Image 1 (spheres, helix red, strand yellow):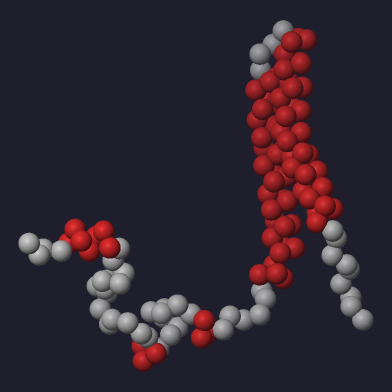
Image 2: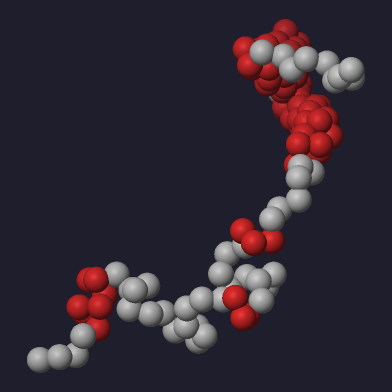
Length: 125
């Protein structure tokens, strides 16, 4: 038996993320609007600024919580099958020097140089 729940359809996942982003935006925006309303009602000038600070702090806390949860959810996806050592790029530390192909120095070869640069470096008359 498979203990995993079925994967939700892509539209359900998209709606989930849209709702999260919308909630973060509202958490940041509503305190500012509420502070501005209080400033207009009481003829003050500091509530909108307080709303801005509170909205940003609470919104950032919510964003960090969302990122932490998404990181936990994706942790299993990142720890997939081990990478094949034979698929490393030439010159990488995991590949032995006996199996490396190409020049042994760090100087680029003419194959690495674009044709325009080869023509510019050509010192023939």
